[in-house]
Amino acid sequence: MKNLSNNFPSFPSTRLRRVRSSYFSKLITSENNLSVNDLIMPLFVTDGIGVREEIKSMPGIYRYSLDTLMGHIDDIIKMEIPAIALFPRIDSNLKDSDGSLALDPDNLICRVVKKIKSEYPDLGVICDVALDPYTDHGHDGLLVNGIVDNDKTLNVLVEQAIVQAEAGCDAVAPSDMMDGRVAAIRLALDDNGHQETQIISYAAKYASSFYGPFRDAVCSKNSNTVIDKSSYQMNPANSNEAIREISLDINEGADMVIVKPGMPYLDIIYRASSELKFPTLAYQVSGEYAMIKHAAEKNFLDLDKAIIESLLSFKRAGACGILSYFSIDAAKLIKNL
Ligand code: PBG
Image (cartoon, rainbow, N blue to C red; front, side, top):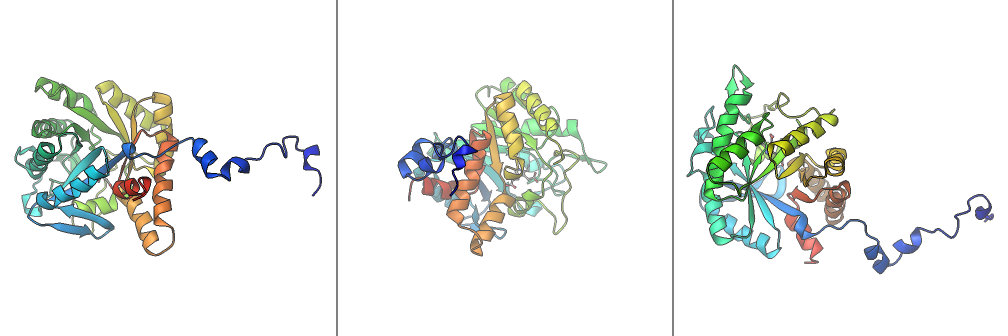
């Protein structure tokens, strides 16, 4: 070999492989670490007794009735995962065009929250604020002449958030993308004695095809029609707009913000955490889970490595927490179980 150092003075004194080649130095020089503390597990709940049905498009993820859910939550507690995010699957004959069941203090979500908080008061319980699991048309808000009406929807979302706070959840997470909802919800929670209920806002939520399996999981789509939410969810072409969305939610009183989906929007997570310096969560959504899981089932990639690598990308981008359907798998890997 020619003497490379004549042309490249840093060679061979700088050898980046040196540190990579031992386990101890790899650990010490690791710039980011994935911890169980970072994880939030989304859970699908359904009516009935003894139900544990697998979601076809999400192998390994199930819908639970309250009784079977409690056993699953035991595992989550054993793994020391700090929080869960709940999503209901509502029977189609209980849905209507206004999503009125969302406001019933005895609805599935409220019953589930009460039970979980009574058994596990320290587990963080996050409830989604949006009407899509409850409406027969599958939109997140109320339709007026076929269009989701922002201000009419706000009135309902506020009620939904209060009902969930009253059931005892720790945080409400508006995922509807209506303008002004964080301010409206904060005001209403405070007026009703729920100053301590957090708002974790889906501040930058894109109109994404990666939600496909979720809509299957909560049965919010009618047969094969794809619901177009692009009049309220964000245009995937935009990033400055995400910073505006997130800044508005911060000013309206959000305690944390979520960027969703995760992997296709790492640049947004990076900008939100570095420019706004605000607690930013990543949501690795159902379609991201499905892609990795299905590829692994076909032996196209190593599942365990792909889980950790994909979750680390969120930490590198600056997320302080991650909602992921892989949370339990990741916790087991982190703990070497
Ligand atoms: C709806 C909601 C969606 C998700 C969470 N809350 C879907 C949507 O907007 O249609 C998606 C989560 C996922 O895909 O994992 N309010």
